[in-house]
Length: 83
View: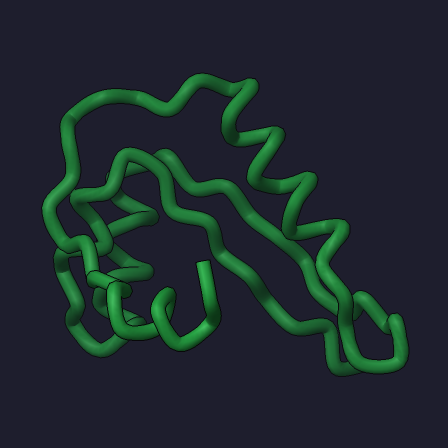
């Protein structure tokens, strides 16, 4: 798929199935993120996998009250380590 085609066909998903993600898939997603390039190859990030409903809700509020985030079975939190 060409870049512009991918950009045009992009959709935002805000409704999720109440179905857990297998741990193997979560590991694969984290591995892909770990292997992604970064500026200067600094890889100055920390990834969190959030499944706890209360914490997902807190993240949804922190993200500007985007409550659809809390309904996802898993939230991947990417935090920059700027130290």
